[in-house]
Length: 433
Ligand SMILES: *[C@@H]1O[C@H](CO)[C@@H](O)[C@H](O)[C@H]1NC(C)=O
Ligand SMILES: *[C@@H]1O[C@H](CO)[C@@H](O)[C@H](O)[C@H]1NC(C)=O
Ligand SMILES: *[C@@H]1O[C@H](CO)[C@@H](O)[C@H](O)[C@H]1NC(C)=O
Ligand SMILES: *[C@@H]1O[C@H](CO)[C@@H](O)[C@H](O)[C@H]1NC(C)=O
Ligand SMILES: *[C@@H]1O[C@H](CO)[C@@H](O)[C@H](O)[C@H]1NC(C)=O
Ligand SMILES: *[C@@H]1O[C@H](CO)[C@@H](O)[C@H](O)[C@H]1NC(C)=O
Ligand SMILES: *[C@@H]1O[C@H](CO)[C@@H](O)[C@H](O)[C@H]1NC(C)=O
Ligand SMILES: *[C@@H]1O[C@H](CO)[C@@H](O)[C@H](O)[C@H]1NC(C)=O
Ligand SMILES: *[C@@H]1O[C@H](CO)[C@@H](O)[C@H](O)[C@H]1NC(C)=O
Ligand SMILES: *[C@@H]1O[C@H](CO)[C@@H](O)[C@H](O)[C@H]1NC(C)=O
Ligand SMILES: *[C@@H]1O[C@H](CO)[C@@H](O)[C@H](O)[C@H]1NC(C)=O
Ligand SMILES: *[C@@H]1O[C@H](CO)[C@@H](O)[C@H](O)[C@H]1NC(C)=O
Image 1: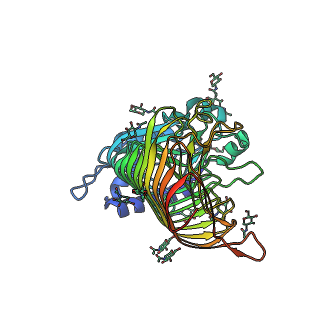
Image 2 (image 1 turned 90 degrees about the horizontal axis):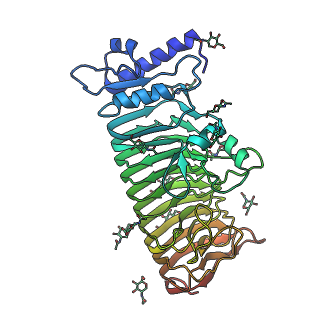
Image 3 (image 1 turned 180 degrees about the vertical axis):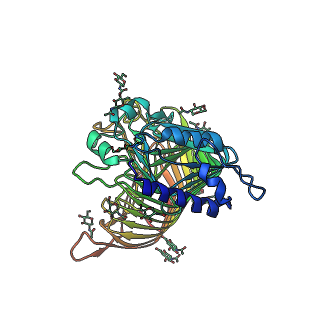
């Protein structure tokens, strides 16, 4: 970015104030601060701090960012100023330890599609890949309600033109092998694809997060999930706002002890369990999920569960099936709805198969059980409280639906939403199929 000498001075002063505020560093040490030379302050705070500064007219700020992680990623602090950082190279900043990262500005990802397609970092699941891997033990990433990751997503929405899971299209952020860590006060706008995936992680709290991926033309913001979890345990999402064109938050393979609370979702699909069961004969679970106090505006559903059929047709990401395992002990409670757009405020399908192929909905061996959908109020665009297509080969059981008070606003005049569509649902509580 280009800056005048005046604003450079302004930024220095700003950096100074921030530093003084954050770590009680003496003002004099700031003048030489940059990411290459961590500040080693006095007795009060032994924590080295790297302040990341954009270089004048730089087209790619990743070298200074990577330097900061190298120098302050273990037992240090990294500060992004209220500047705009251009990101034109993939970043892999994993294996951090006891590291505080404060973002007061905007990181904006470049539009060189062929670069990202050739270089995005693979997650090792489906063909998913990412622009930034970030992880470690005891890390704190704080955006203070202002720090922003901007994926320049419109470029990608236009480029893929609705194609699902376009190979090597990068996710904005992968939280990789993070343990005992916090992400808070961050903003994610116009994500390239999935906004973030929490993978191979334990004990991570993500709170006060704003996600907005909105297409400004006729090309859809498809695959712009707000967040996904995989192979992770004890992950908590609190006070999220998600505006997007796909799963608001989605829990996938081997997600256990997940909490989603006090959040508002706009336009996406709602809370998703799955899709899962995509890899033939592979055993996966989703277990102990608590989703509470959610407000939805124009989402497809409040919550939905999606498994592949028992028959493998093609290969991931867009084909597959035949996976094993179960999802159990899932609670969705205290939802306030405003105008869902699909059939069933709560929806289950075990019919997912290669696009364009008619799947056999009765073949999945992935079992769904012990599921609670309670205290759901407001307006929806459907006469069905729930539409549940479970597999005959492994019926759903232990489904409780209670305390539903919904109006169907798609009818004139409005009518009470009270129907249930079920196949292979055993052992119900609070309703009859
Ligand atoms: C930055 O770009 C401006 C405008 O292109 C130019 O005038 C200035 O000399 C450049 N500064 C540096 C340090 O390259
Ligand atoms: C960052 O700078 C912009 C102007 O460039 C200003 O509007 C904004 O308030 C600043 N944010 C913070 C957190 O200081
Ligand atoms: C991407 O890789 C392909 C070969 O796989 C190569 O032909 C192309 O030039 C590369 N593009 C860039 C931008 O590196
Ligand atoms: C995109 O990145 C490739 C390297 O992968 C580079 O060769 C090419 O010049 C870049 N294109 C633009 C428009 O910057
Ligand atoms: C990231 O860096 C770590 C440590 O160097 C390495 O083990 C890992 O394979 C890298 N991940 C990716 C996706 O490149
Ligand atoms: C989402 O972002 C768009 C602009 O991209 C804006 O018009 C809209 O108001 C935002 N939605 C919310 C709920 O913040
Ligand atoms: C529900 O979440 C909203 C934020 O979306 C919050 O303002 C409210 O206090 C929460 N309600 C309860 C009972 O915690
Ligand atoms: C998922 O977790 C289950 C139960 O812990 C384990 O048996 C299975 O191997 C895991 N699946 C994968 C794909 O790692
Ligand atoms: C079910 O999940 C809840 C969290 O929602 C947890 O508190 C409870 O212990 C779980 N029950 C069992 C039997 O694991
Ligand atoms: C039902 O959920 C609403 C939020 O949608 C909440 O205000 C209310 O307290 C809940 N009722 C009960 C009985 O928990
Ligand atoms: C409700 O959802 C329908 C799509 O099902 C949409 O056409 C309509 O504009 C929405 N109403 C409001 C008030 O947003
Ligand atoms: C209902 O389903 C649950 C969960 O599978 C199970 O624990 C319970 O024993 C079943 N009850 C009856 C009466 O079948």
